[in-house]
Image 1: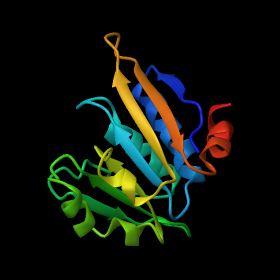
Image 2: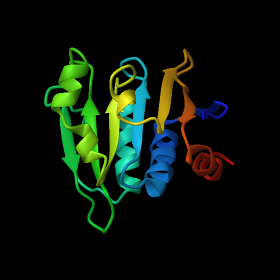
Image 3: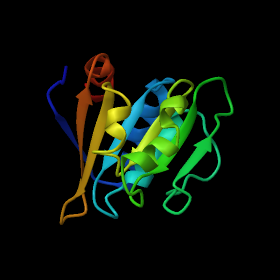
Length: 157
């Protein structure tokens, strides 16, 4: 089941962080988020906001060279697994990360994950970020599967 797409304008970096915070606050273990967008679109900024909403402290950076980082919250709640699939060569390499195991007790955010990580769960949220020429980010939310449309309705009004 897929719901209608919703696109939000995020004029400032702080808007991207704030949306990420609100999203992170509703995440639970088993949630899979796939982030798509060109370099500089705001994927890591959005992930910083998600981490803040989940109660994760510490520095959140793109895991480009380490491929995946696990961040634990200071409170009760799921961990955040942040993955950069840009350098992965295919499905076998994504399988080697055991992300399906992480989905049992963590929320997993995968940058560049479309076509690779989306097969980990039929229920996931695709977030497409684009940076317009006026430097405003557009975030398109594509919920896939049960539960996301209702949760997103609360976040986006």
